[in-house]
Each structure stands twice: as structure tokens, then as C-alpha cells.
Image (tube, rainbow, N blue to C red):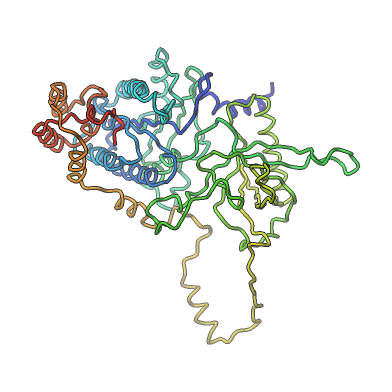
Length: 542
């Protein structure tokens, strides 16, 4: 096999090797974040990491629809590992997560510790064990997650840490582990804000993967700044479902005009859709309630989330690149990529990938765009009249295409475009030219340079003062006697060691600062409450 073919097979295998051989009912994976704070530079990294994580999680909490980060657990590694946040549902628990991030922010004041990889390995082992125990208690629920992804942030050599993980984890049961990312955070004091986008983690970064039991340990490096860390965490918001492809792109079969091939013969490229932007309509609290997310059954728009529909776009024409007016394009853009569906066989995946790359290359060479019609989802008797929507597919210099909805006759409104006057009075042109000359000119638009205060707004709508949370919790729980093991766990926690994992102890008590924790336990002792057994919930109680 040629080296090029082998590289294609390696590329295609990257997603499939993260799944066990048995069928997985794949939703979004649960997340374990392990933060190595043993570096002297942690004092600077801490605030950046905390801000980036809080920004991303407030988005995840505010997005309507199925939660894109269903479960989160957070570990820190000092002289030993410590679980700041046992597995917690991100939806409806933002205050709990915010308290955990506040505790993370306080770690720099405690100093740093000698470096060593054993704490990270122990955190990985403990996180996997917690996930198994959590899964056992939620197997009866329809929301149980079958896989978990681990992200390790460290300033140590990511290659060395990956080798340690490879040695220590080879004897463990890793069936529930989908993948491990080891992210080495590099500090560069001279990095300027305008250069940040050049150092963000890319979709397919230059990384050296270490295989462990058929699964890759993904090794990356990122810059020590908020934007880079935020983009790393935002990758969690993408759709991770590879059970099936999202889109069939249907092209004419080709051939010479004299070939008598049936007109129904089509070339089908199997693709995945990826969001380029988050739909503002999906953010709860950002509108007056009249905004709605895209309806997957609507004939006039597509939606990449949740991934419940297989779209079919039939290419009907080619268009010159300069022949489309921007004013007739509407809606959110989506990125089209060759599918990574794990249920397709190797040969089909490879041929599909090659064909997709050939299409991108040919469109660039010809300076073409494609006009495609969306095929109806349902051809039953209730669809006597089919409403067609049309899309423009644009090539790029990468192995991706961009798709946007384009207006049709029924949607177009009459507009007039008066011709420009050939000459203008100097008394008018002079002030206009002067105003334009005063503007700063950018070579290209970079969205990373603009902020809208959206994060601040979302956090203000999600934040609840701690005393209100405790009052609500007391009102909702019946009175019962406090068990002795809870008192024992309280003493261990106040000594700086987390209590052992136990579904009978409410997670709500794990992440509070010591004094707040002590006060809440005292209050609970007075009224005789048992937090988790009374509610019938374990670890993910809201």
C-alpha cells in the first residue's frame, strides 16, 4: 500500500478507533477535565483557565435543546489529585459549577507543588472509576451516557505524560473511555492579541498520537491565553455523534452526452455538517421569547443541532463564483466535511474521502459554486405539494465546503438600486473622504477581536446567590435524620481531603468552600436532613 493511501487510512481511523467494537448509543460524551497545577506558571494560567471554562460552560448551560456537555467532572493535581467537582449535570447546575470554578481560582494562593505525573495518572484512574459508579446508578435512565472523554491540561511535556498514561492504563478496563487529550499549555509573554488566532488549537492540529488499546492519546500544545483555552473548551459544543452521516450530497453521474445512462443515476458523497457559529436563537434569555431555533422539519432551513435528520442536497447547477449577490444569501452557514461515520466500512470511507477532496479541488480550479436543491424528508401522501429550498455550496482552500441558504422567487422582495452619480460636489465629497481616512483599516475581519458582553449577560441571568440556593434546597427536602457517615465525611473534608465517592452523599456538599460547607452541615443537622436519599437522586441531583 502506498504511503499516501496509508495516511488516508490513518486519517479515517482517528474517529473510529475511539469507539469500542460493540454498538454504542452515542450521545454527547461526558467530560473529565484534569488540571495539573504543579507548574510555577499556574498563578498566571489559573485566571485565564477559569475565565475560559466559565465562559464555555455558561454557553453550554444556556443553549436550548439537548445539553452539549451533559456531565462534567473536574480534578486538580497538586501534590496529589483532588476532585473539585464529581460528575454533575451541566444543565440547571451552573451555580454549582460556578462555585467549583471559584475554588479553582483560589488555588494560586496555596502555592505550587513539585511536578510529577503520578497525580495525573491517579486522577485519570479515579475519574474512570467514578464514571463507572455513576453509570451503574443511571443505567435505568434514558439519559445515561455510555462514554467519557478526558482532557488533561498541563505545563509539563505532553509527550512524556502521554507515555506515562500509556504504561499505567494498559491494565485498566477502558471500554467507556472514548479518548484522552493531553494539552500542553505554553506560556508566551510576548504574544499579542492580534496574533492569538494563529496559535489556537485547530480542528486537526499537528499532534503526535500514541495508541493505547486501539485508542489514540491526542497530544496538543496551545498558547497560555483566554481565547486559545476558550476555543479548546468550545470544541466540546460540537456534535460528537458519529453513528451516521448528516448529509448526502447528490451529484450527476457524469459521462459524455451520448452515453445512455439513466438520468436517475447519481453520485452520492456522504458528509457531516458542522456549525460555524452558534445560533443566537438557541441562547435562552437573549431575546424576548419570540426567537425560535431552526425547525429540522422546516423546508426553508437546515439545522446541525440536534443531529436528528439526514439531509439530501441534489446539485442542479454550477455557478460562477462572482455571479452570486450576497444580498440573496440568508441564514447561518454550515461547514460540510467528508463523513467520519464509524459504521461505514474502510473502503467506502476512503473512496468517499478521496471523492470529496477531488470535488473541492475541482471547484477551486474552475472558480465555481454549486446550486443545490434540498430533497424532501417525507414523500408520503401528506406531502402532495413539496416546498423546495435551495442552497449555495462554496469551496475553500481547505478540505471543507460552506453551505448557505439562497433566496427563491417567493421570498424575494422588489428592490431598486439607483446608479451612482458620476460626480459629486467637493463640499460633500471632502468631509466624507476625511471621515473615511480617519478609520483604522484592517486587512481582514477577525471575529476574535470583537466582544458583545454576551458572557457577562448570560452569567448575570444564571447566577443565584448561595444563600438563595440553600434556602431552596431546604424547602424542597423532607426532614430526616443525618447519617453518621456524613458527619465522618465532613471531618475529612474540612481537613482538606475529599470524602470518598458515595452515591448516598449529596454532591452539593462537595464543592463548597470549607466555611460555607460547615455552616450548611450545621443547619442540616438542626433540622435533620439527609440530602440525597430523601430526594432519591445520586450525584446528578439538581
